[in-house]
Image (cartoon, rainbow over the protein chains, first blue to last red):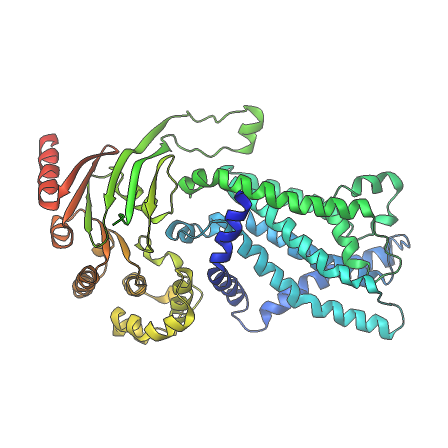
Length: 267
Length: 248
């Protein structure tokens, strides 16, 4: 089984993986705390903009869970991880071409390492969620419930999904020149097709039926359900998320192995 | 005893055309790559074994496939036919500075690059002084500086010092000896001789007959993607010179 071999290869090199992730974080945080500020500033600023647009200008009561800002920030932080993972994994082999060419490490490492480094940044940004949750709880606008246990499950699903898609994107981008542009457009469209600014249950029935097929829908529901009693968790959506995440990893590793010889000749 | 490097019926095919990459537009509109599908075998039907402790020199003109062969032994290219089986760890002196990053200090780079080649941090701690010593006082003075401020000579010196400290049983060398100033080159020679007498297996690509005679006992002559001679280095070199003289 091909997946087992790849997984073993990665485990045998976990020391290297740790080194690479550390290197990523060190480069990013090389200049003191500013790196951390960037990690949380972008989603915070964007959440603020959407808050103003949707609560003051469009005054939509249907957008979903309340407090709206809390719902937004949970979605935005997870989205940032997913989005940055895809943008960077699609360039993973090209931007590290020199390293890929000079070491015989399992090449999947270059993809996993990006998703992992971004994932650690995501974990670093979780205090923001804790801070706002505490803030709203004290004001009596928010109540946590036991389904918070699904939160780590969702995090794991994001990791798998991003890794799987990354394993597809990285070699394809090397072989197909204009893939980066396509990825950028698709990611931007996915942002609106994912319940980040809204919750799936706020969408009209017809749209909701389509949303179920977005693997990120189920993930978003699992992330939020512990914070909002109003958050509906659709079994179908969660099933789609799990199947898509596992499927992406399987298809991704198979495709990666298949394209590897051609990719190595190109970079 | 089993050979440390076993190359069997190795072949790799490259595209001769301007590019192999397709653009998405081409894929959708024409459903095929517009550049001609013109390929050639950079190497084909290569078979040989290398025993532990052997020193092998690769000889051949430009485009003979020397670097390609070395890359497949190093595992950074995957052959289309046959296999290159390597039974022990490899220290590749190919693209020496590949693992180094400009933004970080030289010191951080040593740790990271050594980690990439599988050396645990404690071991780097132990060997750090040795690595910096070998690279020279100029490099030592600059270890806290960002790596991108290094001169190209200093970069290569630090990298060479690091990779040769890795202590892998197989060493692949691709023309890196041409860099560095004269005194450093002499140090490199001494280090390579040390490694050889320490029982390491050496695989050397060079155009310099002097280097080849100095380090290698056995020669492999690659021409037009095929292995045309395999024997004692002096005879293979003679054969190579005979060929090139005949063609000029």
